[in-house]
Image 1 (tube, rainbow, N blue to C red):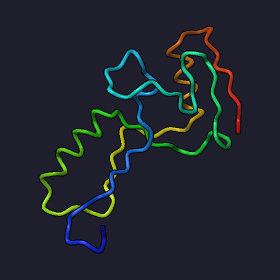
Image 2 (cartoon, helix red, strand yellow):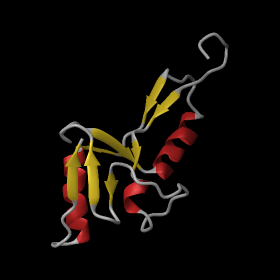
Image 3 (cartoon, rainbow, N blue to C red):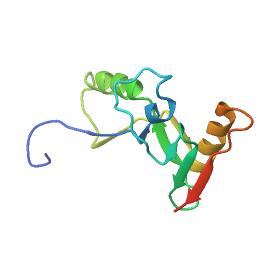
Length: 109
């Protein structure tokens, strides 16, 4: 792309939040397990789980891309961030959302 006259940008959005709220959140993504399996209460955390990760809802990414179409120029990278937290925090929030007796079995990879 750099060798053309076309204007372009890479949209960096992190992990789609949709995967962690299915089927309770409107989404067009197919169900897929990514690090934390909410339904089966298990997680395979990469590393120690304490590095911040970006999470963004797919509908927010779509709104961001549509708004970017009106920009006069695009940067090489466009970042959209819904939230940032560690995998460990996501697991804690998932346990809270599921209820007092819903401990998620976590494997550190």
